[in-house]
Image (cartoon, rainbow, N blue to C red; front, side, top):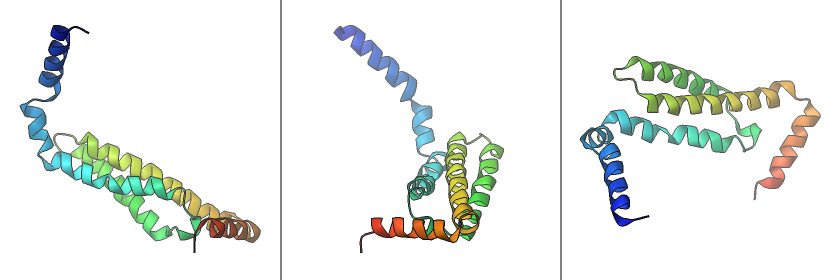
Length: 127
């Protein structure tokens, strides 16, 4: 790439994405609230690989309701907060996965299957 073309491309990128409006947005709670909230869905996605005996049905239910409420809230505020909406869509999806695992382990599996799962995860967890 030639130097003038490269400089022009950099200026175009900077003027398009790094401007006063973007910087103003980055310093608002409209941005930092969802960013800090992303820890919940990241943890939920990570927990999808853990032992299903550790899943709390009541906590999973609470997080499902919480994310559903805040998905609605994210679209009700002006301006709409799509970052918050995305955060709660991811969390809702992960919590639905956890709820499925909880119900499957506690109510849909036979005692033999439950014992097999317990021994599988007991072998994985270091003592």
